[in-house]
Image (tube, rainbow, N blue to C red; front, side, top):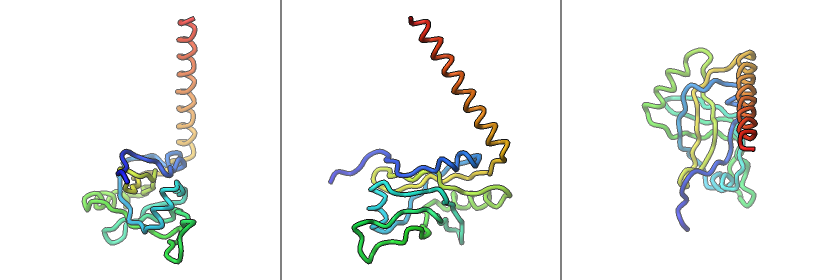
Length: 159
């Protein structure tokens, strides 16, 4: 079988980008069992309730739902077990010191295969207030409206 190349997205946490202000992102490997990998290759996972907890200089991914593999036997995994993240010591130390600050948390943004290996993109994030969320939405709508206006002007110029 030929080795996979590139990046294949499995799951994305869009709500995290809405609820949190992303300060810094990291790419981490995952320690998975065989049936988890097969389930992920089918494109089945959910990051909605996921979070990262640092425990004893190790990073653990909690509440990420990887459903059981349909052809699995008694060796199947539990769907919401905690999974170890593979990060460099320097990255873990940096995340540990920054996440201790009030209002900071570590959330998973996306789960994907990169050159055949399962990776998760995690982010150091600060929770947004309700008015920050409204402001971000307003800016996004203004940007879309400006793009529509520009494209309409360009269409008129061509005609």
